[in-house]
Image (cartoon, rainbow, N blue to C red; front, top):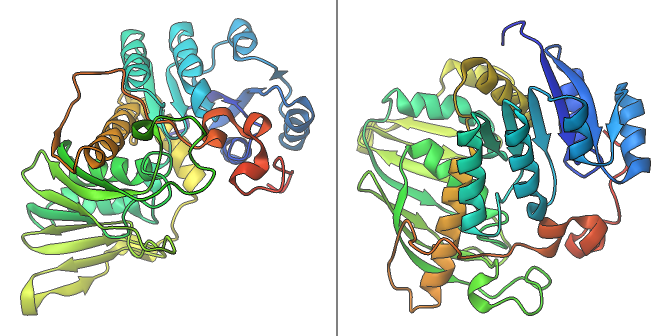
Amino acid sequence: MTNEQYRVAVVGAAGTWGRYYTRAYAAHPNCEIVGLVDRARERRDAIARRYGVEKVYDDLDDLLAAEVPDIVSAVVPVGQNYPCVTACARAGVRVVSCEKPISHELHEADEMIRICREHGTLFGCAQAGWATPYMPEVVEWVRQGRIGRLTAAAIPGGLPTEVSGGGCVQIAALRILTGMDVEWVEGYTLPAVPGYVAEGTPVEEGDVPAYGRLGLSGGIVCEVVAPEPDGRVPTFISVVGERGQVFLARPRPVLIEGTGAAASPVYPDFLDQPAADAFTYTIERLMRAHRDGTEPYSSGDDYRHSLEVAIALVRSAHRGHERVSLPFADRTLKLYPHPYRLSGGDVAGWQSIGYDGPPTMDV
């Protein structure tokens, strides 16, 4: 990074991940937090005191009326992504990010991207760029041609629990790693995890576990394996090339050069360095986007594509696993995430997704 300084703000600072964004910004020498926004005043004020942030706001509009930050991270429920992102774009914020999934409706995702581009705002989304340790370095390694032209891909653990709410990260990471779009989908689903689909949600609009086949624009197929009953994900994503193979996995990736009897693991120099903190990497990619004037790595467009693929998997499953071509002509299609993701813990209940209660000051 350069020595350029950035004025930043966090919306949803008192939430579960908002605290981590605030901590990362507060620790970064190139950032000044000019405002924290959250209506949970007691939790918001406590985190402001902890990190020496002087200005706090109940509403984003109040922040934007006072000043326009360089970067805004909106760490809010899915249902608030659209108004937060578009308000920042219209106010002139240079870089804005939100969390996953981008939306529950394709049209809303389309409009977020359109409005950001119309106003010159660079739009990032979620953590796909840092889904596993060393992922940015591995992506660059693959793009350098170290395993040759890609010939296949896989999501070995499938998309357990939620094809969109959680699975959107894998779908977006697949796009980032391969540089390809999904052009067709053949989908299968498993029964909804109890409590993850709100009562009354239409069957084709509920976020459920999924698997199937994804046809990518480079002429290859990604096999999405049926999830194991225990939700185990042995490898996040794998790709095969003409001269090797890559497994994005934890605690570190597996990189193989060569094929057949000549195949062998390799250990590039970047594996000798400690893996960067995920939230530090995330804010630095937003800072880099501001500096370079380029779309952030792990973008709003990556996550719009993820939403569309997730919708296609569910719709294909309910149509006898027929092949569904993308992009959809009908942009009103929806896929509703878990009520906690859609509305937040203060509305849906923190226990609804397994938390004991609101986040505490443990960061």
